Length: 217
Image 1 (cartoon, one colour):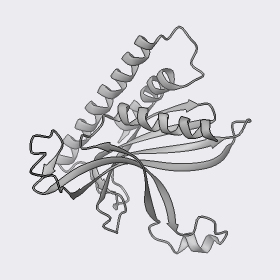
Image 2 (cartoon, one colour; image 1 turned 180 degrees about the horizontal axis):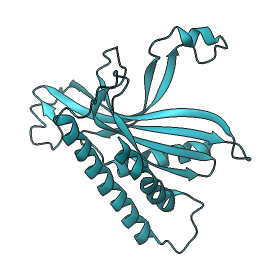
Image 3 (tube, one colour; image 1 turned 30 degrees about the horizontal axis):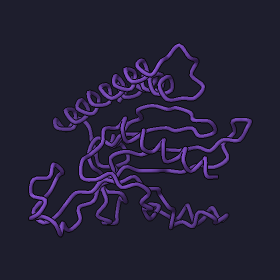
């Protein structure tokens, strides 16, 4: 739908101004927090609008359908040689389209690693996901705030898409042609507990994770 694309320049401006390291200084920390808060509000309102359309069968949210609106872009920013493009899933969506992994994704970050000339050198995908796991402390933690279903506990994490099929190192384009849906594993990098983080908070966590790895490298 056109209204999703209409909002994208606003998301890009808010996220790039608040997060990018190349932002000129008159923007103090208070201004940046306000920009991110506005970005979060815009994301929440847009998600509710998409869900309302879907509830009246005006949109399809099923990622396996070619014309679906399963997610939308909520901004782009640059951190040194890292360019982040952020996507929000309108509802919890299976991590893999045709394989039950028990994982459900809520956000995706496309991370481009750039050379000095700003040309793309490598590209990675990270996800905010949850999974329901057996809660061995169900009785003892009866007063916890997180989502719990009986003896199951919902755990949120950030992880990386690790391509399995087709082999990411293959040079045979035929392998990609005959692969209907790419398959991947989920490499958990950061556990976030039982409460779903906001989209802005989740991006903060990933940003800190990427920058810490960049420092080590």
